[in-house]
Amino acid sequence: MKTFNYSDLTKADIARLVQRNVDPANEIRTLVEEVIEQVKQNGDSALIDFASKFDKVELTKLYLDRAELEQIASAVTEDQQEALQTAYANIYKFHKTQLKTEDKVETMPGVTCWRELRAIEKVGLYIPGGTAVLPSTFLMLGIPARIAGCSEIVVCSPPQKNGKVNAFIAYVALMLGIDKVYLVGGSQAVAAMAYGTETISRVDKIFGPGNQFVTKAKTIIQSTTTTAIDMPAGPSEVLVIADASAQPAYVAADLLAQAEHGIDSQSILVCTSQDIADKTLAEVEKQLSILPRAEIAKQALNNSYIIITKDLDEAMDFSNEYAPEHLILATENWEELTPKIINAGSVFLGNLTPESAGDYASGTNHTLPTSSYARAYSGVSVDSFVKKITFQYLTEEGIQNIGPAVGILAEMEGLHAHRNAVSVRMRPDNNKF
Image 1 (cartoon, rainbow, N blue to C red):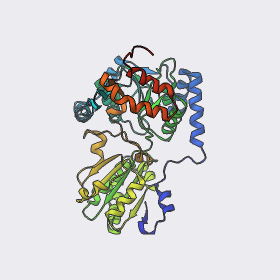
Image 2 (image 1 turned 90 degrees about the vertical axis):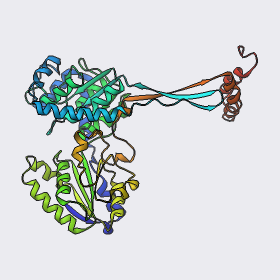
Image 3 (image 1 turned 180 degrees about the horizontal axis):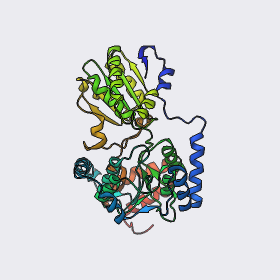
Image 4 (image 1 turned 30 degrees about the horizontal axis):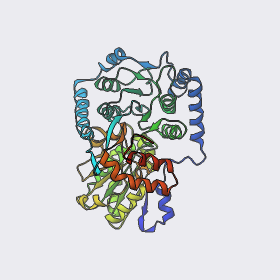
């Protein structure tokens, strides 16, 4: 990991450091556009061809039904079931509170306005399954979808080498009451859910993180179809702010936990002294040597770096520029920093709160904006799966009270039919034009 002193960095240097997962030559876009077009034109046959090409699996059908899921899920041990059930319970408890009925507001006598929630009818969940299978992501997406009341949930996940899904994915599907999982991964899964195929239904909104190809497919789909996406959620990242009160072993563990996600993940340490940096790097080397995914983590760390600042305020300034998906405040003074956080997906406070807790079972959602999109996007919640429809109701008193202002405003804009729609209702004989 390269080390930089914050005081030596220019604005251009900082802009370069915070930029990630770019596609300057549009190579990823070109490949993804080709995949999308093939799926759009050829449907299921394209998906089967891509499974052979990308996943090295020869599929005879594109989905697993409930009976097959039950058979696969039987391999999950009792302690694994209990862990998944604990995660399910905490995630459900946290997200259930997000489903709220808003109060009606009388903006003036006789004029009442309010909003009501309606679930998005058809949603697509993309569950990654590349170098790591993520049943936790299935829980993070499936639980709020169920709480929201979505009537159709389409689930896509890449096939494993045996042409099926991981046992944990199958078990979570059963927990969520989902009877079918489609064996489709990558950008082709996004295309299938956006356009529909002979087997896979078209959805109204697509959810789920993925690699740069999946993220690019989602952004293309959002701009070329009527299918929405949750957010750009690409390769994962963490930024750790650490001062002298941090534990280097904990900080190193957090950096490595992120790095093992994939070679395009990024782990950033922003600390207040070279001493903290040196001790953390020593711990990284020690812990890295025993990790099964050490080679993946090493490549991710090669794309990561350390920033040394004079104090926590400078550290916070850099963090807000970076806008991390995950922000860890490895300091006993975290309460001083939380009001200064402007851009972050999810925040982990103090020395005893690892990102892993939020990734799996604390209850918060781990599907979060990456690549600086935390400047404008929130993580997935129940809100992501609903629409909020506004309503208004005017009584006779209400039309008399609001009518004059509406009529004047309409006339100001030269929209006389708008004015008429109000004035006709204000006349004593308001049943006539």
